[in-house]
Image (cartoon, rainbow, N blue to C red; front, side, top):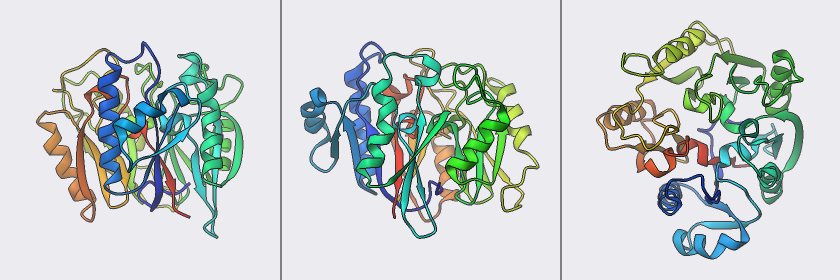
Length: 326
């Protein structure tokens, strides 16, 4: 699996659909459109949409965003979509993990379970089907054999009750082309995804991980963040490099809309020549923007207001999935 900073063919997204989930689904759709157009400044975007929503999506997205009409249940392309792969000859494939809506939290989810295979077929790529119940937001990779995931997620009894941690680790290596898996504790108190790593830590360069900091004593996740940082300290990647840790705060001052509200800046997204990050309208927006500008001096940092997406428990990374260039 290539690193996110490698060249993309396009970004996949999924049009919001689940009735009764969003506080204001019309506002959520407008935020999705804003994210899609921010990404389109850098690379092509394809949005999966139900047949009955295609006309609405076309009118809101315009003509510069492609639509892929297919049955879907929800709108989290990172998790229902495939993890794309590239081999040494530049040919592409995709992993079709089993998807059970984060441990059976939402029903139905059978269309989303089928979405990864659909996207792989649309990309004209080879498909690898896994027995593992897993989501793309549960892993971050460096493209050089290192995978980071969390104890609180894939080994959870609501996903893979018959598999040991060792078996899960072997399957991740086999499916994603990894040589080493680093396990962080995750977050057992985050009950939407059971502590996806993409809200906690992410590779931003070979040997460099961006992780949520624990400097603010007011943070409700401070002890959890400290535990994740401690688990990463002293780690080496698959190439033997000692991992450098860069911390960023959460958007604690952001006005929360509901109990699921996502304040994570780690949950940003790398695109061709750019970084798409959330804008909450608080002081930490500028602090984190400067961090991204320092980490990615050759990329343009683009901020997007996502409050009506964050209300669902995820951010920009959660609603996107990169398809790497061949």
